[in-house]
Length: 126
Length: 91
Image (cartoon, rainbow over all chains, first blue to last red; front, side, top):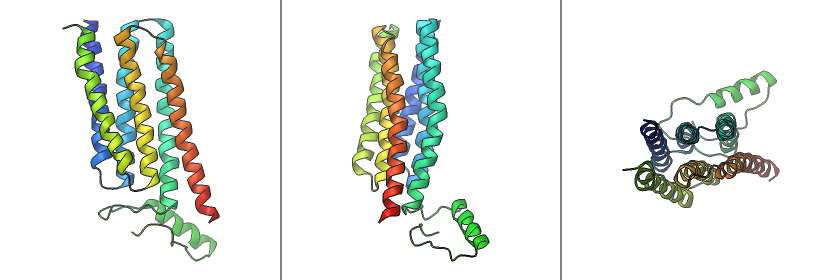
């Protein structure tokens, strides 16, 4: 019975990692690629490491597994936020069918409050 | 079919195939940031592969390596973001 649950969890995790790899290969621009990889990657790792904890059924192994899952769930959105902000400020273009660009609206509002001219020479076109 | 056979012949090939697809994006990626997230995903999938290897060889000490790899993935992404941003401001 435990073997079957472990098989199901490992298969789910592998399928999520496969979906993430297809997403990073096929998506049209950087920002959509980023959103696919972060979500699918963390869920896949969670399933596989949960299977490891079930297989060993040992306190020290379970503690390590929870530490890894907690660390990945905390850090991977932070890393995605940092790298996407860097990409926006270095001028990586959005996909031409994107409809919402909230960071650009925020920058415009900020410049309006300070009374400065908005310098968008390095930001992507809308 | 035992658990070990299933993992060795079904789960490990799926993860290896996805690693190759991510490597294709890593080589192709038009910008530096594409390569950075491809590297991040390669390391994260490596953590999953290490987890499967723990069950295959019945040795839980591989999990320490997985912890270090998860740490390195986060630190490398943050460092690349910081230095790309800084280099952009200076020139």
